[in-house]
Image 1 (tube, rainbow over the protein chains, first blue to last red):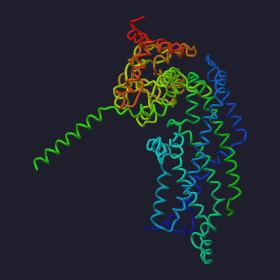
Image 2 (tube, one colour):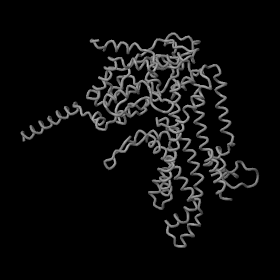
Image 3 (cartoon, rainbow over the protein chains, first blue to last red):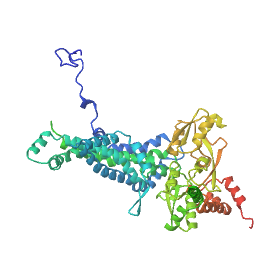
Image 4 (cartoon, chains in turn orange, cyan):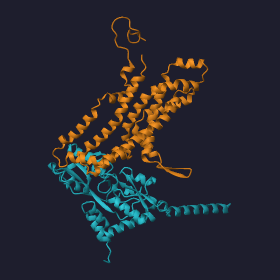
Length: 295
Length: 277
């Protein structure tokens, strides 16, 4: 092969033809979304509120149905939208995180198993669900799961939102699996070797030495995934699961579908999500800074 | 040996015959389940004012909800209402998630293969468009090659596309579709004529009109499980619909929910009215 100085052989004097490719500088970090959200100033929701109130006034000044009417409608629907709508988004995100974390930790530990086939299987499941569109997974789960099943002669109904939970749990599980694998592998191998020399078994090393150190490292990415997951819950509305977007649409239908309603109603949903996820993002970035490994 | 064959054949024939009779027989599974549970699960719309929608405390109300409550009352059972969408209502009934539905469903031949639709139909609506007066449409042909907004899941989206070569932009909600019409992303909004009529009479759409003759006047059907369409359940629902027409209950409900009176209900009422007055 031809030797080109600076490309496939070390540079020997003169100018570099290409700089060395730094993968970290070009691929987004796992926090890109949370980092962006947390960087927004605290008055962002107030500004959003102002825009939501002012926009229809400018856009629909000619219509008989005024902005005042639209906000009056929103005011009347607010308790229902929050307690029967957004509450379900929170519930879905909470259960998804719970199931996704338990399954994800198991899968992540499977990925670092010394047993080859288990490692390969865990890797495959992780990659499969990490790289599939969430909506596709949701559709498959919703159509494949029965609406009720019989256990010990007892018929148990699966509510629609629970199906949404199962569907969203799969990609969360795969991503948590990667978080766990990454955290365990970030512990220097010297610690494994040192522990082995002190006659710790593999299980003891993992549970008593490595994982306790990983916990605080996993916390920020775990919360990062929670914020992303919460903002993904409106996907469930496409499947007819009753959450805030589905109910906002039904509310607008009941208010005669005036287009003036669109900005106040969807804007309200946006504000709710922002108010819920913003503190989580700020807290996540604070934890991230606190636990960052100084280099 | 010969005997053995004869026996086998005759027993096979017997099995085949009994299988034939069993499939034709009514098991009335869903009906019996409803009766023994004392509760019927009825699928209704939550996004189709004034047939099925929510009041601002979240309760399901509307003309079809009143009909559903009447069904449960006549059966002497409790009603549980489940909101369904156009895209999932037939699957819910097929799966058994709901026992029956009254959900603004147009009665189409392909749908009768999936769910049982007992006659007589309880309502009918046609397809029309809402368009700016300035465009001055006079016939459906004027729409050829133009963009028209619609709502996802409506059967006439495809029909108008095939028949008049329009380009349908389907939205998830009507508010979005109407916003697109106002933003001039499309020249018209295709929907059912009674809904457009009530929008136009609200006074918020003064620059718009419903200029065409309604097409595809299509009867609506309520749905029962396919296997029970000609059994107790289907026959009971036929009776309910017959009596609604005969007593004029649907005309009264139409008035209660502010729906423009339709000629169809008048005609059904006259046709089925009692000859002893």
